[in-house]
Amino acid sequence: MVDSVERSQIWRVATLNIWNRQGPWAQRLPLIRAALAALDADAIGLQEVMGFTGLPSQAHESAEGTGWNVHYAPAWN
Image (cartoon, one colour):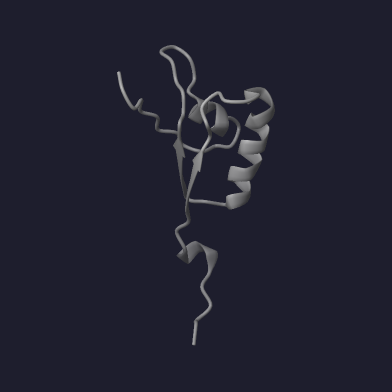
């Protein structure tokens, strides 16, 4: 028998490879935002995220306007 579980008792984790800037980023970005929001995840890990000194990373761009906390670290220096 499975007891019912409330959403607040579940920790959801999602991961997505955003393929850096492959393809039309301006068209892909709103789709990525919508898909991530629809997942209703508590933590999201993104792969192949580009970021350059002095500019927002793709992780920051993806989270813009959502209220999510973003932590970005480059894979190499």
